[in-house]
Length: 404
Image (cartoon, rainbow, N blue to C red; front, side, top):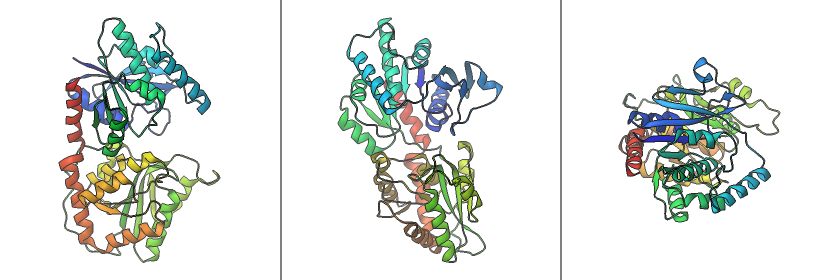
């Protein structure tokens, strides 16, 4: 049985892509899956970076859903200056003969070696260093190991990453446009696309479009972390207020969390959202999202496109809403815009930084044109069924591991 060792440091051991989707799927396929789980000051952290309690998580090793978790003492992030120094040292080691005791940032490399994996599946650039070093050290012992780099976003083309990719056997990433950029950078490595999509939810009822009604609220959904650059809480409140001014009974359902200080850091943005009369704000576990989105009329996504990664991203929230048959309104992010226009499953505002009024105008259109709303939602559901669902991604994952 092939043993797969998944390497993370910055991600939570409960990460949706790493554990909920990939690790559980691979274990169900019959692979021996071990996920190296970082402990900070002795604590495992959940997706919101809070310590996880419970007797199950106190052991050095534990199992969930057929996945073995091996914990290690992780070291927190460093300053940019310190990170540059460490990357320089890593690059020097990679370019020379592998030492008996290679550079070790914390307990990840020693723990990964103890697992003696057949495949080291790294989910971060720095953990790719540990994957490559584990491969080298096992090879010295006459054992064969392969390395997969799973790039969750568009990483910078650093000298360290270029060197690591020379010893990477397969690359996985999250969108077609990011994949194409990686193929241009690293033509010697096969690049596969595994979307951040959920299992196809076929329990969402097909209903005829209902006429706009003052009695039933028109509900807009947003999923995920909220910052000024992603979602923008102030923009959400302004959209809700503008629609209300037009006489629309609107509610904003926000299943997410404010994760960074907003403005000057003096405003408790969570309290402001909770106190807003038209916003329902809270966090929901990954497993409940499909059920919670079933009553939503339209979805909202805003990305500040000043960072190239957001231009090319196909985030969890996009597929989560589509899976529930919810049409989405998004600004002019290339990858999301291309998908939505291709499948006619939402509205792309042709602006990089549309105002709250621009968004409100499109939501008002969907509120008044229920035939359009229903058609776009149906197209979203069909796109998930035919192309993007995790059911399809599982087969891609299976094919990748068969190829190794």
